[in-house]
Image 1 (cartoon, rainbow, N blue to C red):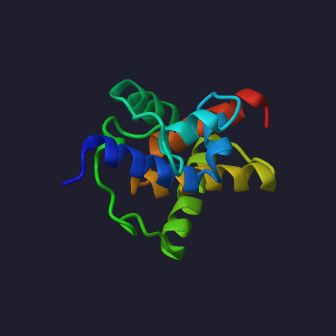
Image 2: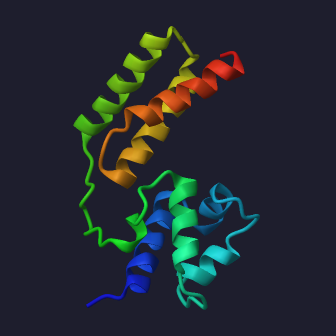
Length: 141
C-alpha cells in the first residue's frame, strides 16, 4: 500500500509533466527555479511533500484540498476532442454572457487555461472561467 507521501510525490510528478517541467511548475508556485520541486519529486528526492506543502501546492494551482493525497490512476482524466470542444463552448458562453470579445490570442489562452484545469481536476469549472474572464475585464481587453 502506498503511503500518503508516495501518493503526493507521484501526483507532484504528474503536475511537473503537465506544467512542462520542474522549473515551469516552480514558477507557477512562486519559486524562482525548479530546485525545490526537484527536491520534492525529482529522480532522487531529498524532501517529503508535507501536509503544509501539499495544501499550498493545491491552493496555488486551484486544486481541491486533498487532491495530492489521492491516487489518480494513469489515464483517469484522459481527455479527448469532446472535452476540448466543451472547454471552447464554455469559454465562449461565459464571454458572451459578460459581453467580452477578446482577441484570438487571449481567447486561445483562456481555453488553454480551462483545458489545463479540466485535465487536473477531471471537471469543467464554470466559476474558474468566470474568474478568468473577470481578469480580462479588469485589463481592458
